[in-house]
Image 1: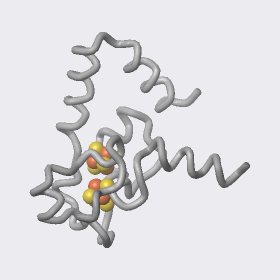
Image 2: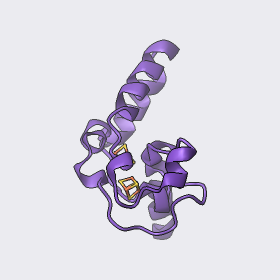
Image 3: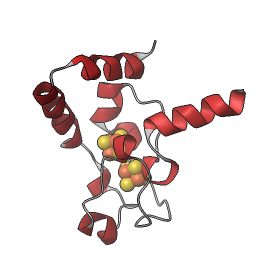
Image 4: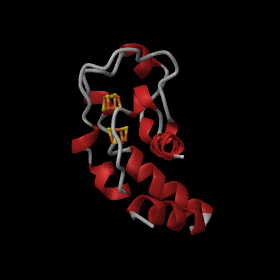
Length: 102
Ligand code: SF4
Ligand code: SF4
């Protein structure tokens, strides 16, 4: 089990309030809002934290750059992937890679 899987398991075991607080603390660190790929439409819709929520809902269609590799959430949660607004959440990209191997 890697860090991401362990972290997800630990968060699932937390009492609801503690889990929500931990999640909010990570969401507050999201750097998407400073990324050149991020759009005003995404901001107006309140989209961010794509590693957890998945692809942007049509508000981001072209990747200019990605700040995920330098985001503190990457090391906090043990994320392996990047470009979540275009490619889907960490869970989705993990699933896609596993599906490709089978
Ligand atoms: S890893 Fe990327 S999507 Fe996830 S919180 Fe950081 S900047 Fe946002
Ligand atoms: S997921 Fe990556 S590419 Fe998309 S807005 Fe966030 S930092 Fe930029």
